[in-house]
Structure formats: structure tokens, C-alpha cells
Amino acid sequence: MPDLSHERLWRAEGYLRIAGIDEAGRGPLAGPVTTAAVILPEDYEHPLLNDSKQLSEKRRDTLYEEITGDPRIVWACVHVEVEEIDRINILRATHLAMARAFELLSPRADLALIDGLPVKSFPGEHRAIVKGDSLSLSIAAASIIAKVQRDRRMIECAARYPGYGFEQHKGYGTAGHLEALRRLGACPLHRRSFAPVSQLELDFGIQ
Image (cartoon, rainbow, N blue to C red; front, side, top):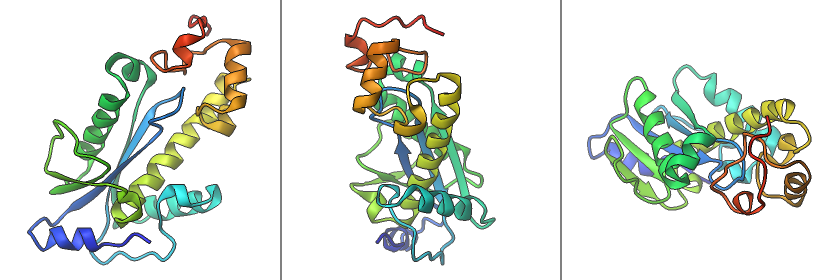
């Protein structure tokens, strides 16, 4: 289970406000990439808080409400939309979302702990932690916020673009999603720069 050992380590080095940052939606064929940044209280504890991928949807939703409803917790969440993903590529879009979420924190964090690898041109001091969402409680909290907010966005989009099953697969390349693409063509929510979307000779003018 993740804990605050990484946060304590860097707090001992003089960084008082430490944010965990994680993303959701880097791999799907449709929808935004979403990033959250979270600053937890120094003494924060939660026996059930874990990497969002290890939790059921119901447990994620419950934890999301607890985290975002706690006045002691500072957090921000950012969506980078499909148009920007296609224009600058998914890696740069993910890094941009991380930077934007970090800059929205108020008060601002002194240090960011980021899940994965170092982020080029990040607008603040940061440390990258591979598999950080399973090690750092702050990153795990960020993973839950990012995942829940993105899932809710995709459920809203399912009503706007029916037939694709966005409410079920959230834009990931499931067999059902690929079949809907072949049958219906792409909608404006699809990432044109992603295979197999870019390889199906689809009509991207569908509204």
C-alpha cells in the first residue's frame, strides 16, 4: 500500500508542500488525457487509499468524494483535449496537463512527486517515481481524482456521441469500441493521430 514515506523524505529536506501528480487516459483512442495534482496534509492517513487501478469503480468514487471533500487537501485537475493531443502528441499533452495541474494548486507546491519518468520543462522542482501511484499516498490520491474525473467526462460524452459505448470502455480500444469505429466512423472525440483510428480511413467530419 502507498504511504507518505517519500513525502516525509523530501519534507525533511525542506520542501513543506509536496504534491503528488498522476494522469489518466494516456492510452485510449478517444477523449482527453487528464491529470490531477494533490497536496495531502502532513499527518494524512487512509487505510483504503491506493492506486486507482487497484480499486473498484465504486471504491474509487467513494474515495474521490472523501478526498475532494476534505478541506485540508489541496488539489487541481486538468483535461487536455483531443485537438491538443493530436497537435502536439500524447506525451507532450500529458506533460502539459501535469504542468497545468501543478500551476493551479493554491497554495503552490514546493515540490512535485510525479508518477513515472521525469517531465521535461516542468514548471517547478519535481522528482519522478516509477510506479509512484503504488508507493506515494499523494500520487495515489492524484490517480483517483484523475481517473474519476476522466471517467465522468467520458460518460457525459456517451450521451453526446451515442453508439460508441464510451460509458463502458471510456475510450480505450476494446473490441466493442473498434467495431463501433468500423460501423459508425469516428466522432470528434476520437484521436486522429492514434492508430488504429488513423488507419481506418474514417470520416472525421461526422458531428
